[in-house]
Length: 456
Image (cartoon, rainbow, N blue to C red; front, top):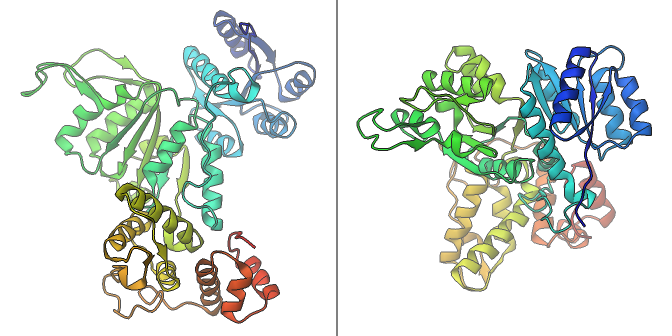
């Protein structure tokens, strides 16, 4: 039977003119609007009316938009919320997204864009409401990068929350931490997941070609422009554009990118016509962008447009608890690709893996294990099979962490427990025996040091 449900949208704003304009816009789009002039009135309406989505202003008298969002998340968590915020109060929108809002728009906004986002969010919620039972479920972060370590668990929790919106995201992370993987998840779990995911590495693209790559060009606009070309921003329309190494773009490109983010329009090189494009932008860098802003090498207004939400991926050295899981996963996947049985990892090999500083992070771990498969016997990877280079300028002694700094007593004890758990398959009793301590003691220390949960 065809579903004829007309979504009900509750609009909350203390400006009567905005309520009238939005009511007309939603009616013309085939939606059913409810209007409230305060957060308190909206709560009364939510208690007595079935509502599919809420659009709320942030700044209002009384409890305001943030108070309303908190109430909805507590009492009606299934109802998504889009926040409206005045230009120049982007931090309010950032706080709303981090608190659990589905999306935000900056005033003044285009009514058609609001309707588009409403429909995208409602469609993304359909599987939960039973409207589209055959639709694939949204991806989860389970198993993406481990998550046993507290630092990674916190990051994954934020990643899942932010993915449900279409807000721009700035990803920080050292080389090899998995920034593109995180960006892809942000796309696949977002309301834009039906659109394309487009990637551009700003660091490896020649500055003279970057403008054409991003914005496209028309035939004859320069010597080798033999035909019209659509740029990557246009290719990402309705989806997500991932700009890696964003800190490397020139001042001229910063200006053009800022205009796109502000206006939602682009102009191909050599063209006179503006083209409207709507996509989420996820930018990534391992550079110090605030430092570049202070020195004038990166535009401050562009920086704030990109960093609506900021997420930082922890380096591998700060989440040693995840190394055993990642190592086994890489060994299994690499062995399967080579058509060979997956070897095990000796206790000495695992100890060495969990002790290394990993300047290249997860990418370095994968490459190390790929090389180890070449040298190892068919049944086991040993410590001698691991080609691990010391940090530049560090002593050659392979003592754990010697290449970074001396560890405190607590840090040494924490690392010893992690290594013992890794060497004993996560079994606490066996790890305690190996360390010469009681099972009660190891349970206490695991809790004390915040070591991720393992098998009993």
